[in-house]
Length: 227
Image 1 (cartoon, one colour):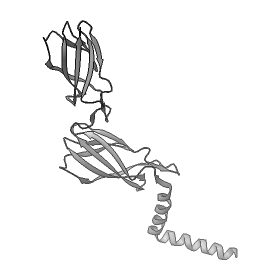
Image 2 (cartoon, rainbow, N blue to C red):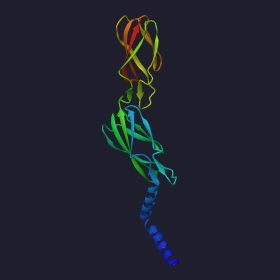
Image 3 (cartoon, rainbow, N blue to C red):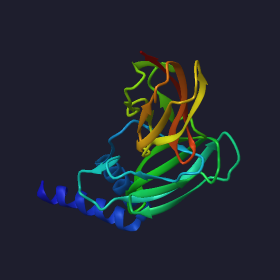
Image 4 (cartoon, helix red, strand yellow):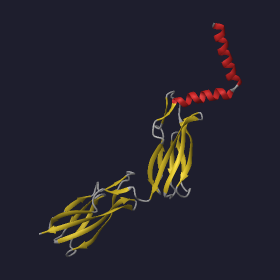
């Protein structure tokens, strides 16, 4: 019985040694079972047409054998526009997407693994002009004060940015006034300004723009000054 079992093992070893492809297929099958994709098949990301972003795949794939994983390949598989965008691998498990002024949607197929064996997924990146800025309030905000009482207006939270840009007030303009133009305003921080009626009675409508690097969203503030 022992002899027969030993003979069978010997024959299997001989078969593997004489047929490297069989050994490789077995190793591939075993390894691929240890390498697991931890996220949905498609990862979605957003950027602007002139802003590069880094895609980190460190938590995307895990290996129960604790192999040192790396990106094996990143390939653009579809694009809604020109092919001006491209990717560059920056670290073993990171790559940088450079839109290069591209507007649209790019889909990349990546493979992460060890020694040529791994798991494959997709990254869909949408490159926008300025739609990542969102106005979180009604288009017009209504405030009131007295003719001799300045008020501080904080616009933090008025506009949000899905890309976490550092937002600031880009512009404030007095577009209509029901009386004289004695009132004035002064910006005192990136998202705060002071409105001073300076004796003005009536309504002032201020148009503000909040954003990043010249791109943002616009809203109105109507301030009624009373006696």
